[in-house]
Length: 138
Image (cartoon, rainbow, N blue to C red; front, side, top):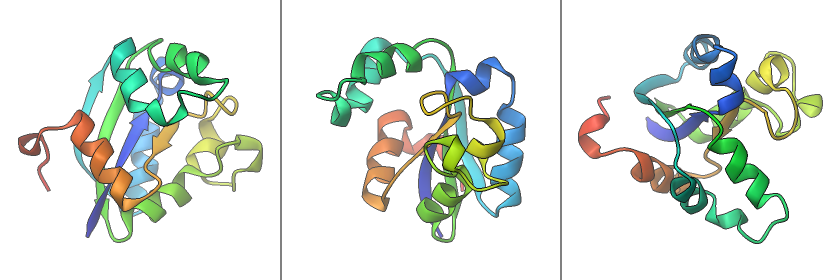
């Protein structure tokens, strides 16, 4: 078993679809072992998305991610990172496969409902960014 990190983004929490997203996650054999609803500060968002700081969409991304509550999660399962990426679907919902979170719930490329780690290394970094060890119960 390994872990990955997920964010249910502001567009999804505003539409009250967190439960449906969690259902999709759990139906695909990933366990939610930690979860909390938070409002990202501008500094937190900038630090979390620092990899994109030179990109033209950076400020828009920060504004979006701080526009409302998000749900941060630790997911556990076999090949958790790849499994969750498959469950999320393509970043652009128009290119996402049927039955993925983004095909079902995304509004557009930015408001695509979820974020997931892209590697085991980044999963650990992202989990450590938001969670203390005693908050994760597997």
